[in-house]
Image: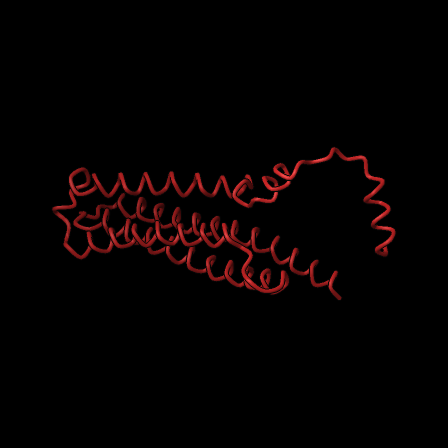
Length: 184
C-alpha cells in the first residue's frame, strides 16, 4: 500500500472521532492493563514480604537462628523487592531517546537482563527462605521427603517465572522482528 492509498483509506474510515484528551489517555503506558497487573503484584508482594519481615523474628524463632541466616534472609527479601521494583520501572518506561528501532532493541536487551536477574533473585530468595526454616531442625526420616518437596516447589516456581518471562520477551522479539521487516 502506498502513501496515497493509505491516506484515502484513512479518510474513508468511519471510526468514532476521538478527542485530544482521549487520544492522550490511550497512548499513556501507565493505563496498560498488563502494567496494572504487574503494579498490583509488586504492591502485594512488597506488603506481604514487609509484613513477613516484621513478624518472622518472633513468629518463626528468628532469635534462635544464627545471625548470618537472619542476615541472608533479610538481604534476600530486600533484594527481591528491589529487583521487582527495577523490573517494573524498566517496563514502565520502555522508550528511551533515539529512534524507535533502537529503543525497541534496547528495551529487548533490558528485558533479557531483567529476566536473568529475576530468576536468579527468586532462586536466592527461595534458598534463603529454606535456609532459614531448615536451620536447627532435627532431620527425621519424613523430613527428607518434605525437604525434597520444598526443593521441587522452588524449581517449579523458577520454571514458571522463567516461562512467563520467555513469553513476554518472545512477544517483544516478534514486535522487534516485525518492525525490522517493515523498515527493510
